[in-house]
Picture 1 (cartoon, rainbow, N blue to C red):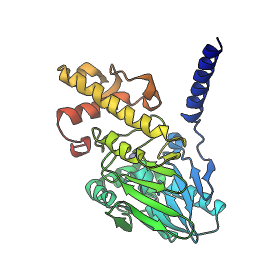
Picture 2: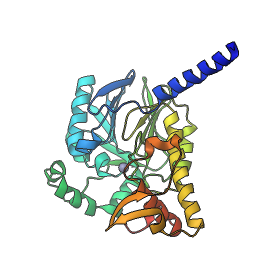
Picture 3: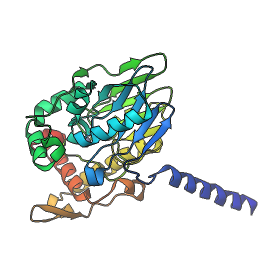
Picture 4: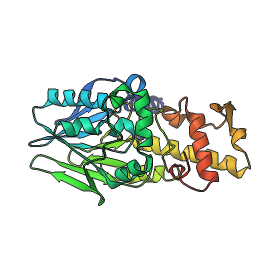
Length: 321
Ligand SMILES: [Zn+2]
């Protein structure tokens, strides 16, 4: 009996632990200290389209992770001024998407150097100025900058990891391969065991896959998982623990596996997603409860992207889109 109670208690404790570790409630607009000298500002993705920002304090300056959209850049700059009087010296673009990099001019006008893995620059050459100009039609903060195209990062590196280090802290910038984009950069604080993932890892149903390499995505995350990590700070959604990496990798693997098996059974795209006009409305692809944190309204769209990648034998980002 005692043994049984203790098993039940252990199970309940594990459940409680799992619950407390996974999907902490979203708190857009808040700034919280993750470890001494590193703060997380949660972007309001739903209303403002903003990504998350991380502020890292060095001995004489600050590093900000992600430039955000211009309006998000201003909010992050304000947050940085509140937590420290040191200047922002570097702003790291985790990738080229507008909600992570279109704020670059705001930061450089404020004296910072924008920094990225060289793949970010290559992606901008590939997709700009088309996306900038399309976004400027929809977003006032982008239009108001009155620029013809996205501002590329001022400094890039191609050897991973690139390291910034002083007496107080070491910050490593990694490239592990093509997951969300060809430029996905991760930022790692080895002493504090903090990992900033950009959109290669999201906490919630925020995975945009059109520019991605869906089949390779889990491999990239498994590389990041080899690091000694306690805090995972995603590109969108709330901060979490290391289990977020495994969950995100599983979601990608399950999705890819489920679509692949449909393809192997000879199913067409119309067999697995429902379309009304050119709008995707639903899918009959089912994933396990373990990955429900990543499943949202866009699952049918993600299934379509995965189907195209598998049947056209190319990473989705290499297909015309
Ligand atoms: Zn993105």
